Length: 263
Image 1 (cartoon, rainbow, N blue to C red):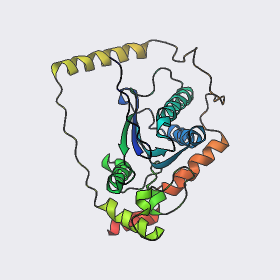
Image 2: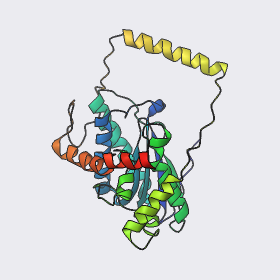
Image 3: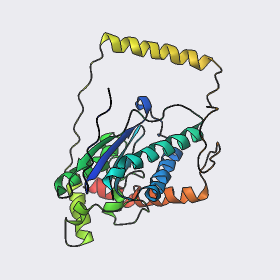
């Protein structure tokens, strides 16, 4: 059965969700998320778009973006998924599918400011909802770009954010207040049936068998990247600068911790 065609209305923003294969924690390491930030920076040169929201979790990513031409969204996400998968596989010494199925995309109308703000807040609240952070600041989420009004080198402010107040400082304060009202909704616990238990048992047995074998994990026929990325423990200096600029803008600072404890 063919996949249904995406609705790509012009002028709309899109909430993108992309998960790792089998929802494994393939991007938990810092160097891998740094590499993802570089891919997002390079993607702006491939397909013109505005990137408004970013959150990189251990096994999935959230993006809020608006392509200048909505019909180019599949091309943009295909390049992001391909380049990131090839680079991350090369970096981690693995092969095979990196992402689970295809990405999810939800369109948001340009005049629907409330929905855009709700989506942006949901993206920024992911680390807090997962219990990774106590607040909204996270080195791999661009919440600091909105609250501190600093440039992270990758993202821009969403038009809905700029409508919150006459000044940028007012927009920042109102958005911070809006985020503090967020309450994480607990997800329903899935009950495991007899089939799920059987599959889990088969997976554990297969994993033990593969662990005992000396199978070569590198894919010989892997495609070459435009930039030759060897098996390194660190990224090139130019790439490190891109990731470091983003992290310094959005990471938690001791002043934030004091404000969180006093609130």
